[in-house]
Length: 293
Ligand SMILES: O=C(O)CCC(=O)C(=O)O
Ligand SMILES: [Fe+2]
Image (cartoon, rainbow, N blue to C red; front, side):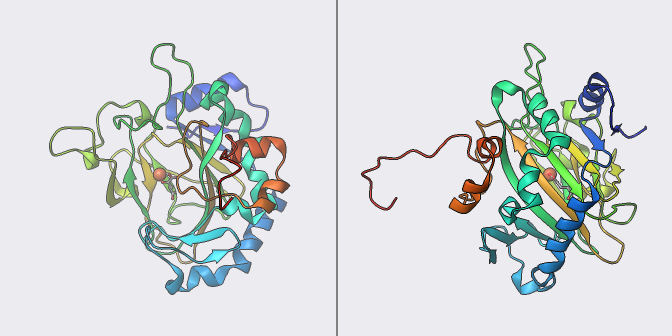
């Protein structure tokens, strides 16, 4: 099967058809070289956090703070995450509503739902690292919708946008997914519920080896955009060195942030109106007389 590659000037209907059918798109050359270079420089400047295992933490433990960016790992194997990377500013701020994808995001979430960011991070993953197989159209999570079932309107509950900062090819631990699985009512064989329900979200097996998976390759500056509903994960990295990518997850404004990082005052002040509506779609509200605010 040919991967659903989107190139400049492609007809929107064709793009939508591919996204609907496969559950993902590869946006070629979506992020220009200068922006990729800026992000790689940030990684180089903060490499000590990646290589010092003492600064990798389990999902519930606190990480190291770089301003309002926090280091973190989900499982250890998935590598080092710099969570809340949008607060690193510059290009990371511009990614919030990057022109290459924000129009697709607004359309697929459905403009009536607005847009917010559920999670944003920069991930560095070394040899042996991977992500277990997870997701699928069978799971009754409110953010794993794809269309309004009565009218077939777009109603995608979450779209992941991965920007490759280095080329990601065979052996480099690419994202893997099962095209079309966002529409499957049956759990993947690795996600079967022993009691016959639809409760198993994730397995620890590297997703690359699971039945039906395809590896999604990307060159630096390409973007892999997929509904979180598609069954996915990543292959184990077998090459030397590290995979570098940035991930912004978009959801309707009704869905709360994953970790509830509170935007710093400086960050908020530097956002454009459109960016602010995404980062803080609902302004905080409290009794002005309350203490401590
Ligand atoms: O690390 C990867 O390639 C997959 C990341 C993932 O599971 C996600 O974006 O939801
Ligand atoms: Fe995922």
